[in-house]
Image (cartoon, rainbow, N blue to C red; front, side, top):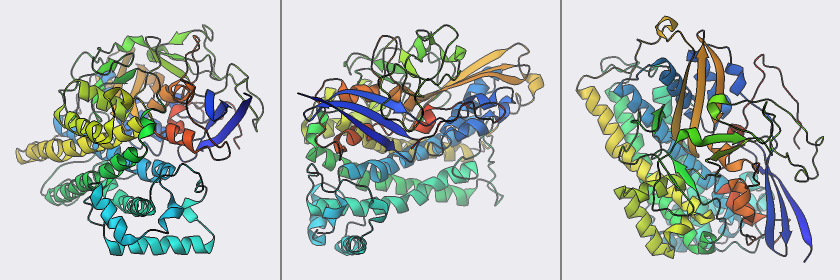
Length: 583
């Protein structure tokens, strides 16, 4: 059977450009290469700068993961200089991280991933009354599931189709034979797609209230820049708390009544995707979404929505046994990436000693084929004890499940029973998609019933302190060179930032982000990165029509790629180190 080469470029657009090169035989993928072709960056621009300013620069690593890099940065600097954020300041960060995590999951599913499963064109033929019945049948109690609403959406779709312009739905593979939902299910899903657009307005207000703006809310080494004073209109007061409470309840309602039922129903129809897209059988997380460690993972987190879920790795497909994490076993490799290390391409460097030296050896764009060369991507390849690792919502769900976290156990057990799949199949395209929705439920639950009430109780008790100023002045810092690091569980997985400070300035900075772990290429031992493994690990991943590569889109989108996070280097003077054109 002849080998055919297939290129998907770009596979992602909003969060940086990802190119996938494939080889297929028949209708199955046999080899895959994950190629980050966008060269951009922030990381080295902070070298020589005041550590208190770094969060504002690295926060611009991504505009979608807004705020999470800033939290990791201030926590790493606090760890280095010995600052301790007051409890109320940490709870505010928790609220910001929780709202961002849920916002990211909802936006990713409805606006970046759902249309891999939902046929928009088919929805224009649906019966609105039957769409209401379908919504009831899957357990969706969303308040906008009405015949009038669905009829309105149908009319809008029909008008768009009649115009010959698909607007935001342009570019879909709407005649692909593997769209399986009936028209009524498609209509319901498109209606919820539009509802999710409106829902975003509420959820981002939380980070705006506490961070002053969105995207890129404000943070502060030592705490938060907002203040609490019930007697002033321009601070966090009772009016603000009432608004945050309303928005948090709205989040809980949307996630439980709309988002999770939709995902569970979709994965029931596409159940075979629990057997498609399995990747590296190793998972890593430091806790549930929002958990933040400043320094050693052997100590206590500086902030977490659930202290009962400890850091851990799950190895070799055993998702019931949790092994402790040793952060000293993390290394980044460049054998497939356009960088160079002083010790050569076979070396692996710990992030605390990381180097980012550009060495582009690829062809002049536009590219025809990159995979003929050993180096084919701008993304490094992180490894844990030599192993490729998956991370993200499904990894956190599996870690929480293995440790018996009650809400996670209840929801995942229910999903496995109703859909009909074993725990091991969470390592799959469908498993990653379902895991994200399950985490949105547990995150909303923690936000509404634990984090926000604890924050309000503190205010009622008179605790208004959100900032530790004892370590603000550089004169209070250690005189010798010091280093710090932070791990934060953010929407796409385990994020870590590593900083060294000398003479009151940043002397070294590295960020190891979830998408780098997932999108990185082959290491010196030839181990595939997780994206690559998910497409070609078993030689069975389908690709029926190279002109409509819907199946690999479903799998890679299930990771929620963010290529802007994966590549982050820039000349300290703001000049380009190397210019690469993408097309």
